[in-house]
Image (cartoon, rainbow, N blue to C red; front, side, top):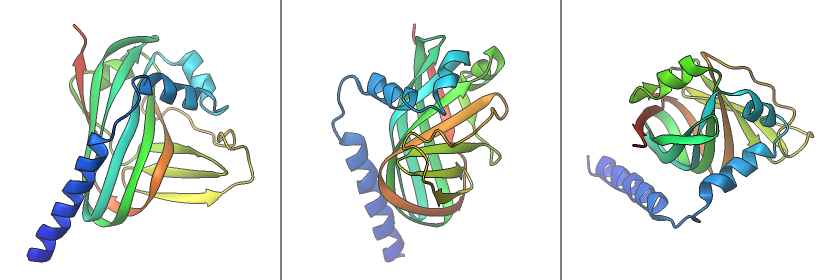
Length: 192
């Protein structure tokens, strides 16, 4: 029991550190620029009804894990609200990681579904990871990865909308091995 409390305390400290790390004032536009520079992602900016961007999502785990990040939601390039991403997971996992995430909404229906207040991805939704010289498929159930000789922007990655949403991730740092149960949950607060 003491070991469990120690592990949980360490996990809490990692999240505290991640959430208190100072970030530049224009972190949203910087993150959007990173995704926009990817040939695989660029078409989504032109065709999507809207998107949600999370500049820094922290994820850590040792059997019990979690993730947290805050972001903005855009409807046709105009900020419509803020969102919070949370994930609690149980299963084989080890490490910590920080990444940026963007979710594109194909149409008004998928945008409305996400912005109803509380939304959760199920295990069938996957994300394309945009990293230098690597591509991976990550889902809320685990991940797999492979090396690539393609461009650093991830142009070799192909994705389509799943249930009206397409998800891309850009790894900022850390290393995490995960095979766990749990999905990302989002809360949305509209701008008044």
